[in-house]
Image (cartoon, rainbow, N blue to C red):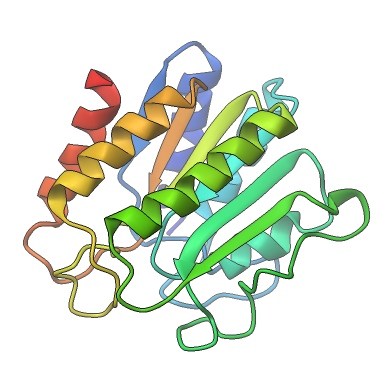
Length: 215
């Protein structure tokens, strides 16, 4: 568990030292882990560790984008009152999907963090067109906020063939995702989150990286 968090921190260190993009193949995932709770196979929040490492190395504001099928409730809870990390999440509507109690559109932050939490819940059966429209909303918010680095909770369980989820992205959609992340134009840390018993998991991860490199 600690090795996964260490890997995410190392990825952030490489990006802070000048790398354009670093992919951290972390297992177990982390985005359901908060300061005093764990869940969904997550014990330490790897993406949050990466964001904190970037801030310690001089980033003024980190954009933290969660594209996992499930809402990153742990990540939201860690940064909900802060303005140095803008958290945006595309995920299954928590009215029907885990974690249920967080991830609603009306949760926008509190205190210094008001306006720095963006939830984009989507219905079961969401396909590429609707999913990428939500992604554009998140990307626009990152630009408005003046983020200077990007951390991505790269869940690949939005794949149509994933047996545990209800979105319908296809392998080529992941190549498109990588290209769009590249066009955000920020130094980027990609942290692997969900993705379950589907043989295409490796293909979809590779497609994201290919899309990023060839954008």
